[in-house]
Image 1 (tube, helix red, strand yellow):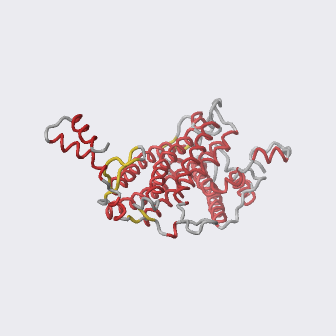
Image 2 (cartoon, helix red, strand yellow; image 1 turned 90 degrees about the horizontal axis):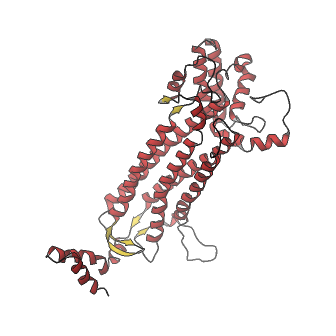
Image 3 (tube, rainbow, N blue to C red; image 1 turned 120 degrees about the vertical axis):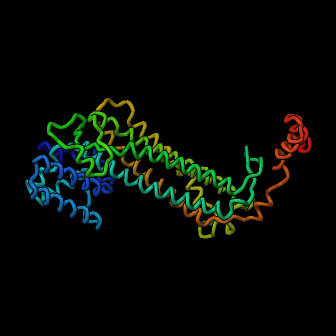
Length: 392
């Protein structure tokens, strides 16, 4: 039975259209909804809606659902609409009237948001670990090969001397900023929406703080109307973070595609990381780096999709919000996989010192020669012109 059931049968085409693929996407939220439901049930017991015996039965059944889900035996179907309905139907089937009490004091609106935010927090925690692993791999490359010189480029032309350490150090420092940005977004998401109902509160003396603490949220999102208005806004922040991080991955991959080019040869990847051509037998292609580079643009598209979906809506809930789930979840998956793959690349990246030194041609030292003359008392402009004459 649907949570909103009115006593009539919904047209099958309307049902398929309004549900879309939400029931498939929601499979990832089953555990999180069960965790939120456990905390909500404990609070209902505290305020006298559930007895101790009823609470124990509900908690045990929710644990059972989590176990079934882990074993692939709790499918969310089109008829369910979403995981929240599937879970409540299971509780009702198993526990009868006791199961019917679980929805007391909440709307599907704050229920959905609670599961999503628990999911987001989990993904962000995982992302934090992935970023730290990448930074560790980058720093290890700096430690082993940082002193090796390579050309620095502006306008894709040789400019001044650089080094492996200077190049890789830019990514290492960028990752520090990425971690700062991640903390900011995590703090934003780390607010409990439960108890806000459909955006206008619940006429029941709920202990919202207890539920927040049970679920590990740092605070309660107080204004129930803002809870709904923040849906999409927080998701946009998540995707902006994803783009913020993937921008660094994009630039790094673009550099490595160039620097691993045989004509440059500064860095080398093992053959096991390179694909081939179906027609050209000599080819070894850096497809992995090209896809790392491309993923920035994919997520940027999802960010624009999310920001467009939430625009021009009056306050309150709208079914438009349902379409936020897929782009956000896909973006987080892409982000996590991309950072993990880039870590693997750095762990297996080698530096060809001979090729690096060979590329350190005379023109790279032109600016250095200017400043040698400046140190001897010549004005910068005259020194610049003097050295310039030697390079045509």
